[in-house]
Amino acid sequence: MKKLLIAFLFIINFTTAKAQMTLEHTYDSVLYATMVNLSVSGYKYVIINWVDSAPVRIFNLDHSLFKEIYPPKIPGYTCTVVGTVISDHLFNSDDLVECLAFYGGGPAPIFKVINENGQVVDSGLGGYDPLVYHDAGGNYKFLSRGGYSQVYVYSLPGTQPCVSTCGSGPLNVSGASQQQPVFLSAPVPNPSTGETTIEYTLPRGEPFGWLTVYNMNGQQLRSYKVSSLAPSLKINSGDLPRGTYYYHIWASGKISDTKKLIILN
Image (cartoon, rainbow, N blue to C red; front, side, top):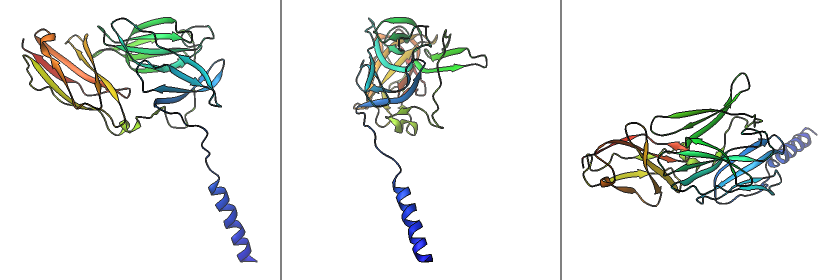
């Protein structure tokens, strides 16, 4: 009888252990995935794709499409990422879904607040490492890195329900970048009077990033798209006046160490 009881308990434990997870859905070509809690519509999945200027896609919990928000084209700028902050009551009081879109390549990195109809409802300076938080009084703030040394802090008019992540954060599918940082070399030659070469390695699985050059006042002067398929970038120093400059690479939502470039034109 005792042997039968032990065998019965073993079968129950084995069956329970086997019934653990069920694959619900697979999203393809994903750069970044997370979940948001909208004030009106509740919890949604957010998917950002690899493709430049692709829309941010928002899905219902049954994985049916809820919204697509396309970043507008800004003359002189390239959209680097869209959809990292999504809300319906954070940026204003209407019920439309809005998201942040970041742009580089111009005089300074900028962001736009885009609603679900593709309209720009607000904008500002800053294009890296966005962070939304609220203080003890429930006032919401938005922080974003700008150039070489700037961080911009914005007060937000609305609120946003929080999402419990049970100890984990957004899923960056280029995710090994958490263990493999961006490698960025010093320029060769340096100082330079002509063409200089900068070697780099992007995080594993990250298809592209942006190498940005600043002057000593932190003003962004150049922004170059870099690819994981190429090991280096050549910069014609004749495009810059004589002086000292700094540069770094943005990839996977992170910024590399900063390096110095000296031009002796």
